[in-house]
Every structure is written in C-alpha cells, then in structure tokens.
Image (cartoon, rainbow, N blue to C red; front, side, top):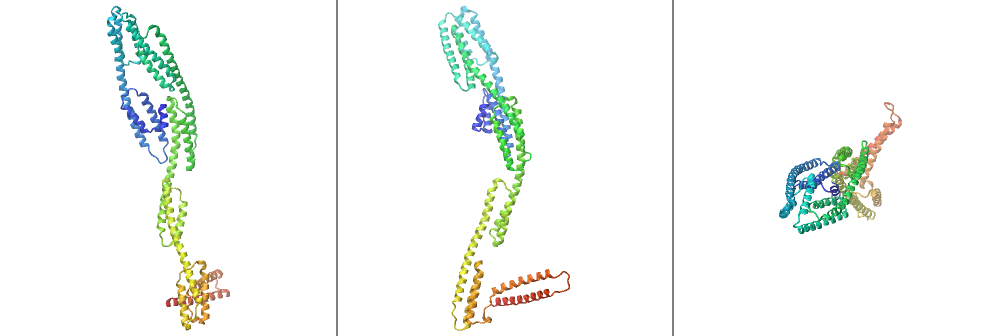
Length: 549
C-alpha cells in the first residue's frame, strides 16, 4: 500500500488507471495478487475521497465518482470470487501433493526397511526423488514436517547404501555446491536496501534449500549454521523494519488526531465574503497537506480516524458551496442587468442625437459601476463588449466634433474674408447699387454656418461694425439698410426673459388677496406692457424679413 500510494503521489495515478489495474488483476489467474489487490482497494478509496474533497464550488461530479466506485466494487468482487476458487483449488491440489509426497516417503521407507536389497532399488529411488521435486506445494502447516521426514528417510537411505558410495558422494558434492551458493546468496542479501525485497528473496532461498538433497554428514551442521546465521541477519532487519513502521504509525496516529482537532476548530459560520472563504479554504488545504504528510496509521483505526477528518472537511466545504451557490445566483442576475446595459449602449452608439446619447451612455456607465460582479467566466468577455460599444460611440463623437471644429474654423475664415471685403468695399455708380452689393455680402455672411463659440461675439461685432461703417460712409439711411434678423432674435429673447422676470417679481411683491394697488406695481405693469408691445413689433419685423428672404 505504501509503495502504491507513493507512486500515486509521484505519478498522480487516476481513478480510471486504478480501475484498469484492478480489471487486469480480476482477469488474471489470481495466483499471487492478494496483496496487490488489497493495496489497490485502499489506494482507490484514498484517491476517490481526495477527489471528492477537492471539488470546486460549481463542480458536480458525484455521479461519475459513484459510477467509478460501483465499477471498482464489481471488479474487486469478481477478483475475490476467482481468488476464492483459486485458493480452494490450490488447497485441494496441495492436499493431493501432500498425499503424493507421503506415498513417496512410504516407498522409500520400504527400501530402507530392507537394507540387504537397497542397492536393487537405486533407480527407483532416483525416480522417486524426481517425483518428489515435481510433486508441487503442500499445505504450509504440513510443509516442515513432511520435508523433515523426507530428508530423514533420504539420509537413512544414503547411509544404508553401501554398494554405490561413489554416486552418493557425487550427490553430496552437487548438493554441497548448491547449498554453498544458497549461503552466499543469503549473505549477499544483507546489502539489499529494500528490506521487504530481501526478506522475500530469503524465503525463496529457503524453498530451494528444502528442495535440495543432503550433503556429507560431517558438513551438514556447519553448512546449515552458516545459512541460518545469514537468514537471521535478514530476519532481524525485517523485524526491525516493522517495529519502526509500527512506531511511525503511532506517531502518525497522534499527528492525525491533532489534525482532526485543528479541522474541527476552524470557525466558518459567520463568513460573509469570498476573500474570507478563500482564507478558510487555504487553511483547509494546509490541513489536507499535513494529513498527507503525516504518514500511515494502523489499519484497525485508520478508517474511523479518516471518517472523522473527512467529516470535518466536508462540513466546511458544504457551507462554502452553499455560500457560493447564493453568490452564483446573484452573479447570474448581475449578468442579465449588464447584458441589458450592453444592448442599450449598442442601440445608442449609432444615435443621430449625439448629445442625448452621450448623456444616456454616461448614465449607463454609472449604472454598470453600481452593479455587482458577474460569473468569472463571463467577466472579461462582457467588459470588453461593453467598453467596445462605448469606445465606438465616443470615437465617432470625437471624429464628428473634430469635423465640426474644422468646419467652424473654415466658416470663421470665410466670415473674416467677407468682413475684409466690406471694409475694403469701393462705392459703385449709385447708392442703390452699392447698397445692393453690401446686402449681398451680408446675405453671404449670414448664410455661412457657425463659427467657434469663443469667436462668435467678436466676429459678430466686427461684422456689424464694418457694415455700419460702410453704410455711414455711403450715407445710406436706416430705411434702406438691411434688417439684422439675428440681432432682432437675440433682442426678442432678451425681452422674453425680462418680461418673465418682471412678472415673477410682481407675484413676489404683490400682497396675497390684496385689493389695493401700489404705485410701484403700477409702474412695473406699465413696463411689462411696454416690453410686450416692443416684443410684438420685433417679432413682426422678423416675420416680414423672413418672408422677403
């Protein structure tokens, strides 16, 4: 399990990869997969729980995780069924092998019981030895006993065998070579860094030792002592390894109990902002990392401790998901409001009434600022769309304004040119011809469009001064001079304002429900009537000149 979880950390193995490994095991012969399958099961639920806890606020993969869990359970059950059948078949086979080996021992015992004819059965004896080697595994509970009996009866047979001592010595020599090599291999395992691998290799060497026949009697004790001492070194390391592992598990247990307390102590009931939730989530992530780094705990209490840890984390993430669920709803509502603003700006950006459109777009920009955030995935897109529509409107407005300024400057130059023509005007043959020529220039001047606002009064005064001067020079009376309609309009507007002001003053000065009239109010009423008559006169003049034009 430790190596698998380590691989998971280093290679980031996914749930699907674990399922594929389990599928491979379930479809195999299940002959030596019990530890791997059990480790895969622990790794699967370890990884599954981590995936579930690390979900983001808007993720919802629980159905996929449940489906993967069901698939894994099905594969594991299939494996267990095959494993059960395999173990039953193995048990049956081992029992058969045990009976076969007992039969071989009985046959050799029959040879030993007749020492006078033992040499006659040497070939049968070698055949039985070959049968013994090929007989296969027996139940672990009977293994030591059956092999002791076999080795004992073999030694008795060789001790009794007189006629073929050379062959016996040859077997002893070959067995000595094999067992010496086994001793060397056992001694070399002391250099193996992986204690588990060394221990497993030692078990394989012991299996070969039991399968190998005896050596010369005087060498047996010495050779076995050498092999046993080499085995003792590895066994001590193996025991020390598991003692250290047990101690680390106890330390990890204490550490994880403290981690559970820390997770349970996190306060999150009064959180009211995403930033505060981010701090809490960061704290939980630190706790999760501490949990991963704490190491492995004893299997008997690991599950209940993990359930406590997971429950504390789950409560925090559930509260966070509830909070952000509300935030998401608010952001969706904000998105609708901002989409409506974008629609309005796009309608206004091509408006012919630039002034009103500017006021409305400025107002919409202020509304945009007041609206809260939208979903993160839409924020940049909507902002670009909104600013692009506003920029397009203001760019067009700027271009129109620049064109307007250019046009006003051109108009200014045109009007200045006409003023210069009037100033430099040379009298014609008759006063009427001169007056008509001047009137034509005046008409041209009036036909020219607007000039810059800060030049308007200046150019107007210069124009009228030049016109008055030329008419004075030409001695043209007022009746023959053209009427300045623009000036009359301004005068009329001023009279309207003065009349309105005077009428407001009368309302303010007159006592409520008073039947007496004061001299001041009489005078003010007379002035109002006078101004109204003057206004009517000016309006008629303007109307008359407009009809002539």
